Image 1 (cartoon, each protein chain N blue to C red):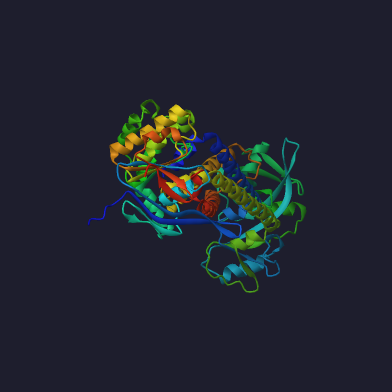
Image 2: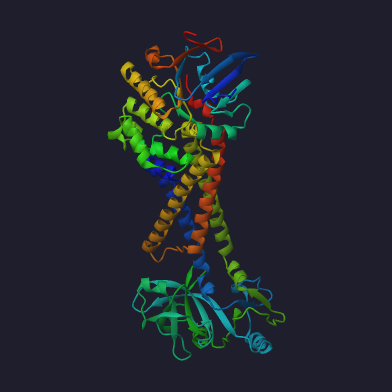
Length: 227
Length: 358
């Protein structure tokens, strides 16, 4: 039997935090596999481990127990430096509140990230931004953009290096309903177009119809809707 | 890394203010350095420009020119014992002079030298000294008081009249402008008051730096002579203390600035870490930014200080040496970089986890 390589594979993940004098478990036996070209949502009210899930899936911190693999690369137990390299090459982040660098225009936001893995390719950056409807905003700085433009620039930044896994943290949080939906639609489009795995953490029920699979975070575990 | 440049270009106003402070700090340090060497030069310039490596003083003079006295006999013996060496006598005395036709008295230090010896002044205007005639070569500062070649000046003590034959640059001694006269002329002036005056010397100047047979006299290097000029050491110490005080204060201000700049960027650094930028790259960006700011500040500060030196009046003792300015600038940049390096500890503490909200 050939072992299938998943874009993201989390098995038996445990994570707890110290809360006063006892340990507060946040994730308990969490399992999740996401394949290429698949867009999944992780839904749950805030404060119940969504961020923790995202930071572990995104190689920002390690789990207490269990294994996490990104594109077949085992990231449990590796050093901070090793995690940095995984984030650099394997993962594209879309953060809440865009997190663009204030001093870079849209094109430079992307070329700065390109330089992390190779060489700047301004043409590719411009074409991706144009695909996302930002053709007229290529030279705009974040403070000149609308909320939707900023979040679309952030999407472009996450995809520009063609990472295997796209992680989005509440991408609709700062947008109104229509724009939020549009942004998630774009994430879906790019996930399908580049055949990447996408995981969106959200509490925004309105965008769930765009997902291939939906998971609810309950008591530290992921429960698939309809499963 | 060009992220640093783009950051500076985008936040023009902020970095302009930071740069302004850097420029002012380095300008202040350079300006003080110029004043320090200027004051030092006002005391020692005539000795510094003299073409002698060492001096022979009387043994009881404590290496101080003004306290030393060599009789003609002692001088002759010294020359005799060191045949083949270039040695010439130097006599120094203070007085005041008045130009014929002008009311103002000016202090002067006479330096009586052999017109054919190596202490004979380099004249920038007019002609040099000679044994014949009553010629005097004045420091150029006399020119701003209206003195010109061909004027007659009267020594106030003796009433003896010199004829101004030329001007020499940087002829200052203990804050007083120097008048060079030939030893014969000097003797004639002294004899106007004291008919039995015989020329004696403060020191014998030796051109080379090799060994000199001095007997009971004392051999003193040029540096020690300058060091022991009255007032020189005390002045230089005071100003050097102020200079270093300023340097330290500037360093602390710089440190605080760069620390705050780094703190302000914690969020950005968190993001850069989250998207996989290595610590080394982030530190490189910060250090590049500080290097640009500090080097820019140094260049502008130097331009200001040297530019201003042109517009200062001649009477102001300001003398900025490029070697000194260069050293201060480099120290300034190095201090900035050290503080920049210290700020990178802040970056190490930034947790990329903070980028994920909710």
